[in-house]
Image (cartoon, rainbow, N blue to C red; front, side, top):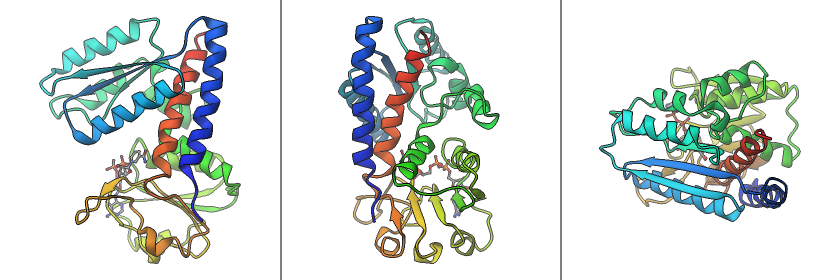
Length: 281
Ligand code: NAD
């Protein structure tokens, strides 16, 4: 059965929208999300447009700042400083990846932790790992909400996360661990990967390769979370990291691509922006 990320994202955003209406009454203004896009990468442009659309849908003030590919690191950092200092901006996000001549880590560190709606700033990352207050990264946060919404039991279950990136794999593993799952983090050097994956009650695949995980990766009855967003090299269609046609018949639950993790990631971005706004009062 599919986990309907789209429906849960809609409900999550409706909830945010209701709270935004209260914010306007109580604090005199709506939360304000500023998104910076450097360059013209087509996928990034699509993501930024969707984020702006979602922000407007929930009633936020939304600003998109488009900077040319030739923008220097100093210019980008100066723009971030300006937004950090602006008391009427509550969330600041730089769409990644940035052009190669700009140091991504410096950009992530430059965004004020209180406005870091992506949850990538080192102090938010430390907060997650040390169980202190933090802004949680949107993709794993959204996945946890989908698991909870579908009453997936985590305590004592075996979870395998394939991928160990800072923005998906690692925080995902930590969130599952905090809910008392027994977690294995698998990666490109893992030996016998299908065998390792097939032990999972909950399998999360965040690799970035079209249809990477087939039915040999999946224990019958497992819950499968497909984080991947890839273009099928032949059809150009959006596909996940999981071979949906092979895996859906044996999984108890699976997130489709599109319509699974993606919409929930954006809904959590809206939630994080609201939380950053509310933390000011
Ligand atoms: P990444 O490239 O930073 O990390 C990929 C990880 O996969 C690495 O840790 C690597 O060890 C692992 N890997 C690569 N090849 C492997 C192999 N052959 N076997 C096992 N492991 C392997 O990517 P990321 O940022 O974590 O993103 C992963 C995927 O998720 C991408 O498709 C990305 O587009 C997608 N994504 C989706 C959302 C969303 O909202 N749905 C959000 C973020 C990322």
